[in-house]
Length: 129
Image 1: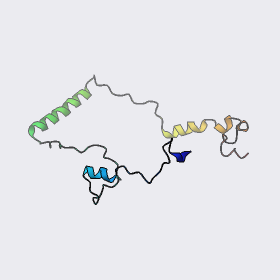
Image 2: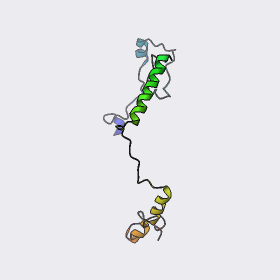
Image 3: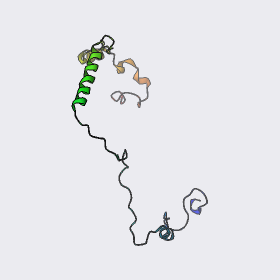
Image 4: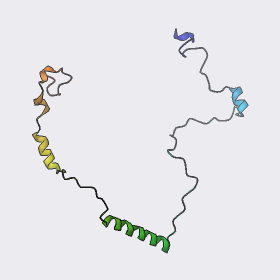
């Protein structure tokens, strides 16, 4: 049924179909001896290239003064009483204490009766038994 070409889009007669035949290429201006472009082997660029480049910063006394003024303002705001700092975690424990607590937890192997489970769901060490 698939060779009849009626449905499904497969089968059919003739050789490989081309996207353009010679008449269409000639009407577009492509001669028979011209090389057509090859396949694209690289992904497209993530961002288009910039047509304009940013203007380089010129250092002057005025810009230096404004940078110093900005930094002084930031320092003043951080030292003021209205600046809110994120509280530090008091619950942070060193890794050694966490490892000790994890070692005290009951093992999963002891918690369940693995004989009731199928072999696929048992831990690998108990699956053969």
